[in-house]
Length: 332
Ligand code: AHG
Ligand code: MN
Ligand code: MN
Ligand code: MN
Image (cartoon, rainbow, N blue to C red; front, side):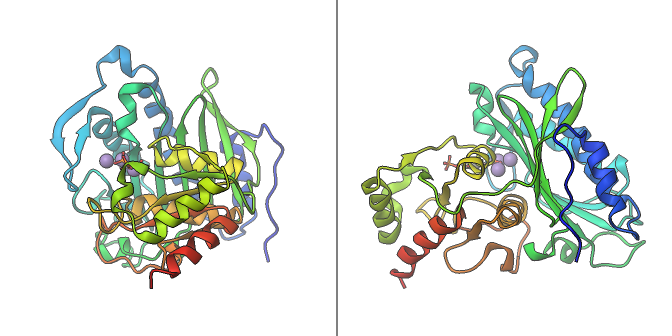
């Protein structure tokens, strides 16, 4: 059994990744390099976001993505930056991105990892200077080395993730990730261009008093969700909803809380995407002591059928997720 890796607050991300790798005698360093590639791309995105209002990259790009969403200019820029970093970095053979219909073949057929990514999460918040994020999952490919990536490499259950994380471009920029041995948070120091460990071994509170949901869709919620919301209000819990999943998740991770995106009339299967939004956050929250379900089963146990599959999503402090589950069970 490997011991929980700890490092002092202030350790630089690159050093942290390198030290962690030394724990695994047979590690080849490819995953470490891949994590560094993602961190590097995030620094470039961070720079673009910080000066978005000055460089004319706010607003819509004019196209639609595969889900029929209007792409923002920064959606397109972030997608391009991450795809390029992962392709040039050489450790990734295939990518699934929110912004591309099909599997992206990076041409690195000798690489053993695939990545699923939401390059820019919460893109409706760019133009109003509110936090946005990036979400990623890393899997080992199933297909043979030396061949192009396949769809089955991508349609793996969340339990197969070897690493997952997010970057939150907030009042400060943070990178939070797990490789299955705890969750570690790093804060970006822009003048040094480096992430430093600021939140080692993050744990979510067992219970909390924040609920995060878009109540605008209230009329199309199921009776059980309506009743649960009444229950939240009877307890006088705080309603907090940014509309950037990464931001809402991060707050609840630090303070204790629950995030809900149930099925609605507009989004009968829920809005959030299993492969590049829910699985990563489910892996992180479980590593931090929390829970994530679709109302019927653990998110990480869902067998994906399609690349852009959506799912209802309930994630956060374990007692709060169990409570909403009790309400949902009444519907059956
Ligand atoms: P994205 O910007 O990557 O398409 O994700 C949007 C998601 C998520 O960030 C957010 O929590 C949710 O959509 C908000 O949806 P509503 O506007 O329906 O609340
Ligand atoms: Mn989108
Ligand atoms: Mn998103
Ligand atoms: Mn997105």
